[in-house]
Amino acid sequence: MPSSPSGRSDLRPIPALIAVAIGITVWLLPQPDTVSDQGWLMLAMFIGTIAAIIGKAMPIGAISIFAIAMVAASGVTSDNPGTSIKNALGSFTSPLIWLIAIAIMISRGLIKTGLGARIGYHFIALFGKRTLGIGYALALSELTIAPVTPSNTARGGGIIHPIMQSIARSFDSTPEHNSTGKIGKYLALVNYHSNPITSAMFITATAPNPLTVKLIAEATGAEINLSWTTWALAMLLPGLVAIALMPLVLYLFFPPEIKQTEDATGFARQRLAELGHVTRGEKIMLGVFTVLLLLWADVPVWLLGDAYQLNATTSAFIGLSILLLTGVLTWQDILSEKSAWDTLVWFGALVMMASQLNSLGVIAWFSASIQGLIAQTGVGWAGASALLVVVFLYSHYFFASTTAHITAMMAAFLSVGLAMGAPAMPFVLMMAAASSIMMTLTHYATGTSPVIFGSNYVTLGEWWRAGFIMSLANLSIWVIVGGLWWKLLGYW
Image (cartoon, rainbow, N blue to C red):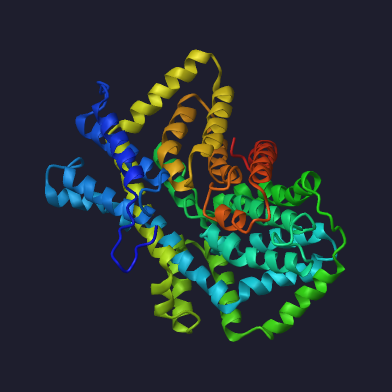
């Protein structure tokens, strides 16, 4: 709940008490011989923090501040108070965390300049003669802006959703008139299910992806450090196939009443006319967009040599600097981008806790326990890998945060799969894809889902049905197409 002028706290007492009780219960449970006192206390604090996030005891940023205070004050990482607070704040120096925060700030320019809306209406003007074509236009709009929009909520809910609603209303398909079946329901589902697919395709397409990169590096002893280019190339073909099939699958299971939409192209052209000529801000935004993609794809290195190599976060800072110098964004815009600063705080806290669990040996103990259970089933590495991916993906029914889910489970599952003999590169890529595919499942799966579900174009039952269908479709695509693609790339 938001704080009020009267000073009412964001704290929700009952979920908070439950989270504290869970943390204390874990702490009081019998401690394994292989886990130190510090490691067990860290695990208790971590599980309590995850429970608080799931129960929404406070906003996730506020919970993260409390978690940092707990870790520092408890001395769980060091007996020295100075070292303890340095350890608690250590993740804020991570370039990956800053990459996401800066990219979110950059993506504000897509909304401020209107470039995001212009891209969407251009695609509808091209493909909008049929309802299926509008679906593809929404999906392609998502795909176009995904590389520089790490807030998947801003992308799917803030940029694409208003366009989708405008099209639906132009055909008098609204919840108020009980006419969502005309076209709005189908478009809302396409609007949403584009989001998990594009999130899987680029490191910078959703905030938790850099956390996945970090956990993969730790699980493989730094043997696999996924760069922006490697991730994008690996996810390219399965992602494009998923984008191509998703509107068709939803069209089959949730067919719109209106099939022909000649008026949609005219409506889109009218909106483009209202936007007028491409503005200076849009041109600069498009230029920065292009420069970032070239830098992240290491094109200067290919053309000019290793001396022109830049870290992805450095490139993001350069892009934001250009937008500030040209006035496309102002410092007030940056200060107002609350989601970026919020992400920086909670992301830093959760990465810190996950890293400490690893360094204190808790992840190794948990992984060994899971590995022992799987070994008793007698399955080989292929069966173990499949089981781990499926359990990881569908356990998201119990999570309302992809970051909390990844933080809680990813490291252990990666360690178990690798220890069971799974080919390293395809297994970690499949787990990375699953961390986005799982967003399809529920109306609380990620920040985008309550925005689109809340517009009331889709019932709860339809949402969950569509989510399960698309999870199966996406999982099959990444296993089959992804597996063959990664074989062709020489990853296994």
